[in-house]
Length: 206
Image (cartoon, rainbow, N blue to C red):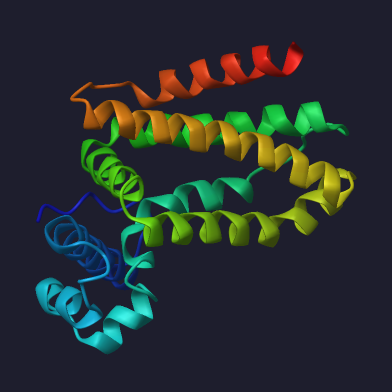
């Protein structure tokens, strides 16, 4: 497996941790595609990745969570929503900006893009992975809602509404990206995300 370059400023321990997490993710993806999620065990993933079960649980948690390493960039983006104005529209624009930036970075990283697409395609066929993806999205949003609300002076309902809309746009774009890949079509994810925003905006205005 080819390891992606470490982020700037990353220490040796952090780099090794990331490399091992990527190895676990690759092993889980291979096995899920070969056998399905239900018939794959943690011990099999750990063995293929060359790590102990203890290391697996420390770095990945559950077998489903093992494949979501690239989602972390979008979770981190929520913490970077800074001055966003004092209404839902302004916050929504800020969320779209940080999500679009991360999609551009993902698209530019060929390894991460290919890995992320494999996960999204699996989600379309594996209910347990879909459930894990929804759980992670909800947990991440709940973690940042009070912080964002306090920072920009909006109610938590306002923040949940803005995040919910931005998340719907992301989810719709990702699902369509995976569907097109299943049909053998190569879609440009950042452009597809922008198209979805326009379509949902037009639908909401009618």
